[in-house]
Length: 446
Ligand code: MV4
Image 1: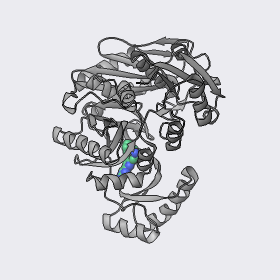
Image 2: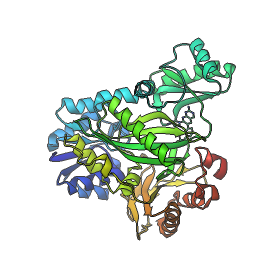
Image 3: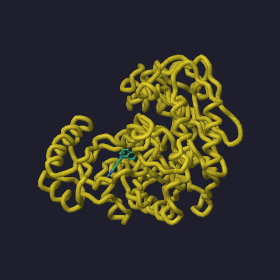
Image 4: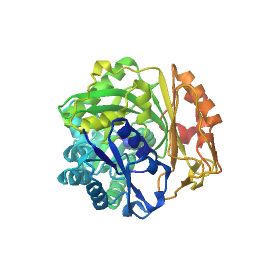
């Protein structure tokens, strides 16, 4: 097992990883930017090293400084958390070249899955259902028209280097398609330095359901069931829950089995998430893989009673998972609300500033993953997450009620937060009935 892990991240996820390390008797080394100097969570670490100025490019994205910090502190592994360098295959390779274990999959698996057209082909070859579309990249306008006419309009043009909703465009007919292809290529070239694109049939009003997987280095892969992340705004998730209210037990079995098949085909190791779209009929289609631990991982932890960060570290250290698929059981229903420092009445504009009053909620089945406290200054330079509120109850209705109670109990002042918006979603009859799709927020509440 590792002796000392360097955490190449900040905020709530850094604290989450520090806690897991200490429970495993592993020392935790933090890196921090000038903006995070003096932050409370840094006091929980055994060492903390400043790696640069406030802007991410000069600190949390500086691979050279992070590796240097690991070397001078004698760390034997690096945990990237989510965001920043978590899905950077070059960084993963650099760590391993420096004899530092990167807590994540191999650089090779990351590259193959990070390229969406390539991930689609791996899925197809493994007989995992994919959205009907092009066989790999589309190389010309003629090919795009041919594919679109065979699958039928509307179609979605996606950047192969994109993901998470970046670099997508809908085309409703042939004229639309020609113009959209050009724009999509230009955008992709600008945003990702890669103009490769592929085509998919447009799925109308889908739900977003993802499967948590964990794989050790001997080829054993388990799934830890699904999370439903359909409640999003502009590709930012707001609420996640499990089990998904949208799928029956047969679909669940097939979905989870598909995710495991894909992970095996890609020789995936450690923690990952396989994303699917679920259409109005309940049919599912693979869309992409997230090669990291995700923000919403606590939903699965509460549902299964399994600490995913500890399991991820174990897998990265080359140990067997020690958990069989049969022993993964789910219990009740879990809902998570992301509490962001944003003004929901003003286009979700980020609201940085000092938290003067902070009262966390509590009670039965309540978990708050947060690094903030009274006196904490929310920085405008980083994502605006101030905490994740997770409730665990026997049924979905009880979970909704408990979440409403917690959101009313919680106080974060004077900065604006998404708390009142969450209350509006939770009280909506359509949300309560589980009748939602990815357009719900925009159509119903904005
Ligand atoms: C789609 C789609 C409809 N049809 N692909 C957006 C995020 C990225 N992971 C995939 N996304 C979508 N891909 C096809 N072929 C609709 C979306 C989509 C979406 C997906 C999940 C959650 C929220 C969404 C919001 C808008 C669009």
